[in-house]
Length: 129
Image (cartoon, rainbow, N blue to C red):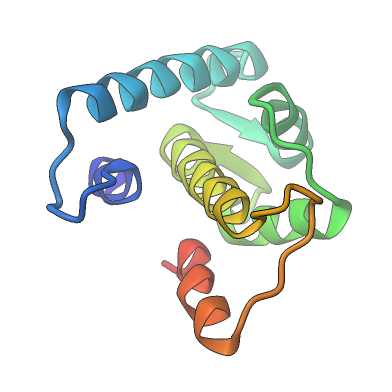
């Protein structure tokens, strides 16, 4: 599940395959994120709490508002409010793709974008199952 998601969101040329540079970038990101996950899963349970998830997302370099953290918790946490490694990686892959898309639309670099209904629909796919 995670591999397919990673490949689809990290390949840039539309072929469905990663070139060596794209693969290297993805692999380095996964290693970085694995280190962050291990830091917050110090009890070796294989999961982190939704509170730890907020800190882990920040450590990965993403600054979100409380509403987005709540949405991520609803989407990725289990009934005990914990997030496993696969869900953690899936979330960060999607966040990276959304941040990349935002930067592409923010052509003047002012931190705001304006999207048409079609563009909103296309970008909304990142958080669907």
